[in-house]
Amino acid sequence: MRYFTGFVLCLLLTAAAYVLVVGGSTGPIVLVTLGVLALVQMLVQLVFFLHLGEEASPRYKIVTFALMAGVLFIIVAGSLWIMANLDYNMMHMTPEEKDNYMITNFDKGF
Amino acid sequence: MSTVVEEKALLNRTSIGFWLYLMTDCILFASLFATYAVLRNATAGGPSGNEIFEMPLVLAETIILLTSSFTCGIALIAMKSRNVRMMIIAMAATFVLGAAFLAIEIGEFAKLISEGHGPQQSAFLSAFFTLVGTHGLHIFIGLLWLVTMVVVLARTGLTNKWIRQMTLFGLFWHFLDLVWIFIFTIVYLMGVAK
Image 1 (cartoon, rainbow over the protein chains, first blue to last red):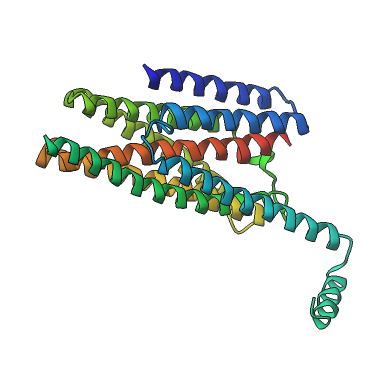
Image 2: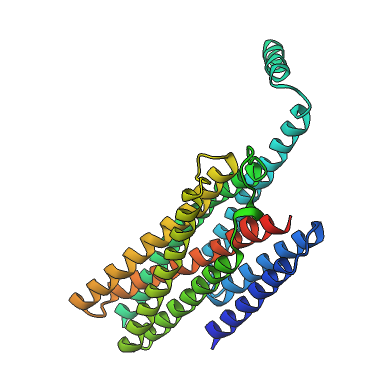
């Protein structure tokens, strides 16, 4: 039964991610591994639970899902990128310096 | 001959429409995830994630929600083979598991707030409560929907309209489990492992 296969796969993926973290592992490689495990579990659920890819042509569900994934990536990656830059450029300033910086740059018209 | 074909086409159209709603809901969650990711270190002297998260409870929540997604799938299969008894049992299991998930989450929130770590303490906690709370609100609405489905079933029986609505509920419930995987990974696991 397909639901059961998906269920067991998800349990295994969840357990793997949990054991990895509770075992005390840290660092960038662990974070990437966790991300990959989550993406794999997403695919498992999309295929086994939500039956994505089974619809007949035209495949509106896949197309809208791909568009949504694009927008999602822009929102998340864009926010992190912009805010990290802002942080990097302003973190060494005191609050007064930040105010002055904003005021002078505003006068320049940014 | 044509009524069966028409009904299938109607179910197809309805589920595409609902799928579009789910995709826009994904965008809502994307903006909440982006906010959380930006503010995850803005603890303002308050606790960070690995100081307040109780991982065994979170694992229990994850397994409970995954199992309820599975029982929901069983209900849909039973519905297709017109096995009403099996379907009702699976729907009841889905409801109980969903309610258990929500109870654990509310308990977690209540404990954090009573210890002074409410959403007003830091930007990190505001983002945490908003993201996880919005998912919890979806689960609550899903539970109300499920109760409504049972009440309507008792009144009208297994009509084509009811079957369409139950199919959409299945999509909704599986989708909420999908969102939870990312809350579990990004908020909890990555919060502890960083």
